[in-house]
Length: 94
Image (tube, rainbow, N blue to C red; front, side, top):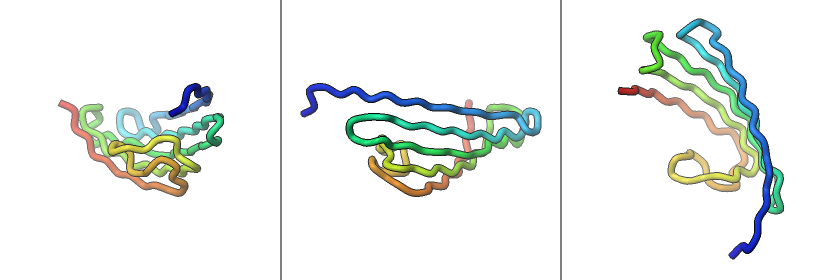
């Protein structure tokens, strides 16, 4: 067991509606500085709202990971992963 752990990190996100209510590209960068390494990732993606409302969206995303500090059933990669992950999602909110 670990008796003490102190990590710090940061995340920066930016997005803009390229086509109002329809197309939203985004980028994300993050890193953690800690005693077990310095993992980081860069993400680029786009949200497409075919109906012009946030109730229905299609999302395409590419992640480049270097020593991912997270991983579980909600993520398509394990802890410590390095490489590129491509994802596509269709979401309907009701």
